[in-house]
Structures are given as structure tokens and as C-alpha cells.
Length: 391
Image 1: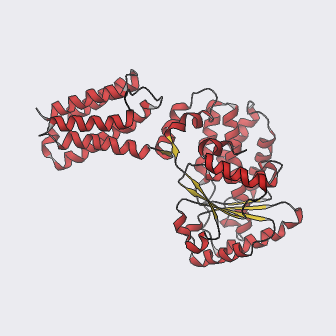
Image 2: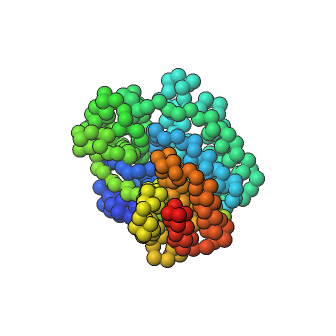
Image 3: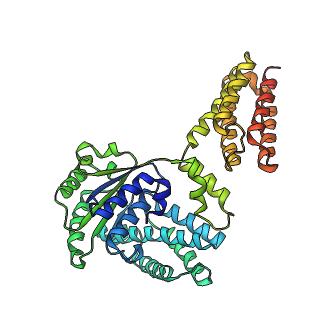
């Protein structure tokens, strides 16, 4: 249970496990934190654990309202699978498909006008048939599965973004909870985007939390919990999803593919999107360039300060982590951005621009093509740039 949270969010995982063991899971829960910290997948696993029988058999008891664009993640998972055809990537398609299906089913409930639903009825029915086929397929190693996933990808690409959370959704929650009460299973409403809803919608939802329908749970997903307001926050049990340390990235990314062929592209994606540290890498790269290009009269200070920026990112050796080539790319792109900034304010730098670009390209080639130590290459680059500027 909670296989993603166990690795990436151990504190959250321990708290949820304790609540489930003791039967004390709060009825109104808040999962807050940045994107790519496994808030949604943990919410779905929580619902599945309480309802029982597995996630794929509980589409009638989980109601999903998301503000994010669900087509992006689904397309990415499909592309991973169609490229690698591994069993773990097939599993990821299943996970992404359940998010799409749950979102589409709730969209049908909330859209009295079918033209405003996420999918028209014909495509929705076709997608549900594909979903049943994919879920029942034990292996992704056959042509029929691949054909169905390609078709699902086409259908999902036409999905419309839903309108924002409103007071009508609160009424629908009440009606839906009562309508499904006869199956005696818990109902879960997973809601994203409540923070930007109108005050009237928030107040209506607050009243619902004060008198929740029987056997019903609400999981709210937010990036910034402050957007919910103090009163609403006081009714929710918060779980803090922290940014994922770079030190865990190898283990997490390894779970996305079996043979390592997708490692580099996935790593680039996570470095840019979700891991704690990507902002620091960019900051250090930019500062490294700033020291070089703004301190022509103090070459020793410029050189030593730039080297400190490099050491912050690449440590003592530059070989201790397998992601250094990817981090190097981010770092040197920020260094280049810094140079462009100073060119605009110091016209004398324009004359050396071709030499600077040449040195940066050479450094990239040595790391990315010839697998040289990124830290050592950057040290040499700093010496060359400082010498160039102070001639």
C-alpha cells in the first residue's frame, strides 16, 4: 500500500497507515504541497484502501474533480509505454487511465448540458470499453493492448478542460452521496482547485463538511493551503507533501521503467518539474555567470566565487551522483542566460560573445559527448572565461 508515498513521502505514509490500522481516518482531509509530490496518487490509494477490492473496481464510489490538465500526464504515460513496451510502463498507463475515467465520469454527472462535458457520450462510452479491456489485460505485450492504448490516447486528446469548482458541485456531492448510499461502501470525493473557488462555493462546502453525508470522505488537493481560508482549514486534517529530495530521484525514476532506456528523459523531466533542488541548481548556475561577467576588475574573487557556486551543486568530486550530466545541462544553460543579461548592460562584452559561446559549447561537448567530469570541466570553463574577460 502507498508504494509511491512510502518512498517519497514517508511521514505521510506512516500517518495514513496508522489511521487505517486504527480505523481513525479523518472524514475531511487536506493533501497540500507542490506538484509532482504524489498527492493525487496517494489520495486514490487511500480511497482504494478504505473501500477495498482494488482501485479499478471502485469507479462508482470515487468521484474526481481536478483542475489540472489530465491529458498531459496520460499522453506522457502512453508515450512511455509505446516506446518501451515494458510491464511497468503498462502499469503507469493503467494508473493514468483511471484518473481520466474518474474525471470523465464525474464530468458527466455535473454537466446537464452534454455539450459542456469533458467528452461527448459516444467517445465516453468508447473510452469506458477501452478501460475495461486494459484493466482486464494482465500483460501489455500484445498488439490489441497497444492498439487500444493508441485509440485511448486519441480520445483523451479531445477532452475538454472542466469549468471551475462551484456551488453546484457541492449540491451534486450531496445528491451523489445519497444516491450511492445503497451499496454500503464508503464514497470518496477527491477535489482539486477548491482554493480558487468563489467564497459562496467555499462556504457551501464548509457547511457540507460540518454535516457530511454518511460514510463519505473528502480529500482536498491544494498547492497552497492558505488559499482555502482559516475557517475551511480548521475543518480539514492536513497532510504536508514535501518537495522530493534529489537524493531519492534514482529510486523513484527506476520505478518508471524496467530497462533504463527512459532514464535520462525522465530525469530531465523531474529535475525541471518536481524535485527539490532544481531551483537551487538554476540559481547557482546564474550566480556563477554573474560573478564571472560582473567582476572583470577582480579576477581572483570572480574565479573563487564562481567555483563555490559549482561546488554547491557538484560537491567535492562531481562524480558522486549519476545525475550530474543532466544537472550540468541546467547549470550551464543558466550560466549562458546570465551572460546574455550582462551583454545587454555592458556593451564591451558583445565583442567576446562568439568566444564565450564557443567555450560553453566545448564544455557541453566534453561532458555530454565524452562523459568528462562535469565539475572539472566547469572549473576549466571558469578559468577560461575569466581569462577571456580580463585580457
